[in-house]
Amino acid sequence: MANVSEDFELHAFVDGELDSERRRAVEDRLVQHPDKASLVEGWRRQNAALRAAFTHVAQEPLPATMRLGGGSAAGRSGPAAQGHGLIETGVIHWGRPSGATRTMRRVDSLRRNRQRNILSWIMTGLVGVFIAGAALVVFAGSATQPQRPEMIVPAAGFVTRADLTYLTFARDARPVEIASDRLGELAEWLRARTGLARVPDLAPSGLRLIGGRLAPGAASAAGFLLYETTSGGRVGLYFEPIGMAGSPSTPPRATVGLTAIEWRAAGLDFVLIGPLPSEEMQAAAERAAAEILSQRPVANGAGRP
Amino acid sequence: MTQRKDFRGALEALAPGVRRYARALSAGEPPSVADELVLEALQPLREVASNDFPGGESELRLRLYATFTQVAERKLRESASTGPSLRHPVIVHGLADLAFEDREALLLVVLEGFSYDHAAEILGVERDILVGRLVRARTRLSAFDNQPSAPSDGTRRALHLRVVK
Image (spheres, rainbow over the protein chains, first blue to last red):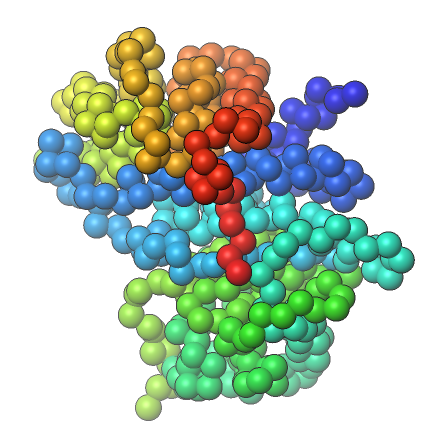
């Protein structure tokens, strides 16, 4: 028998109306109850379909009759204007982050930002699909294999490679090859070897760039950028050129205690991986995705010859 | 007068969002229907000064949507419409199938990104009422999607975000 107040809470969860504590409680409940999780997933898909159907209206030029002749901010372009087709899919795998008590950013404050509307719905629209994935991560080693939703799969082992790369370098004394003080050089190197369009600036999400390096990918070089929070948490952005689709024999998983968010855009598969709470990780991932697609001129950075 | 100029800029920047909301709310009507409603909502706000909105742009946004709500409820709710044509995606048919006030609630929260409290304020109802309408809208949309009488199997897929192969 459906518990009515519980179901109201599920709606509030989907709409970002819960504080972080209740949000975690619902996340835990969804892992335990796949039927509720698929309900939530259905609503998220509904939300995505609604936005997909009408977002274009806000991007059309205003009819002359609606122009007011004032100093217009209508010239705001940005990632939303690039077209949502550039992001093909997104995934969140989460291990339960270990008891972080940092201040949470509300995901909905990002969702309401006009410039990130499209990207937000694409990211959040697919979160629900991976509630089942979360179960696989949290109960690693479980004998039964829960029903896995159909998903686009980057080259087999993609998330595993990202995970390993993160674990290998994030806590090392020399975590990066080129530091952020040579940003132009770093950007050019990564662009030449992997096709990365720009190094995302995640400072507004509280993440300072430490630097980056190459890493072994599947069939060609992968890239790895490392960021740091003010309290020392390290978040990695791993990316590979899109490889051949294949089904891994085991489902992708992040180390328990890490959250991994993957998406595909502009010819690359990306994973943002780190120990921050899932809202912060999601916000940073949305920002990174927006940055990749932005058409702002690339900053040359200090130290460019 | 820089103040008035900035205010008009803010209003103009909000107009695309209201157009989007209006289009969705009219659920399959020709775009001109929605645009006329938006114009009517913008009209009374063109002449007010920016110091009428101490709460800044967010207060202006609430007022604009509230004004639009009044116009829409007057003109759109009762209009005899033929409903969306087959070329519209399934979600639009689903929207047209909803009660007008449930549609308002759903679109304000999902499409325009308002919080429950703000959406309730725009519609002039209590928060609980707003949530009830939103829940009804979602439930009915989910049921609509499962009906075998959807236009055709091809268009049904538009309702779901497809994971691209």
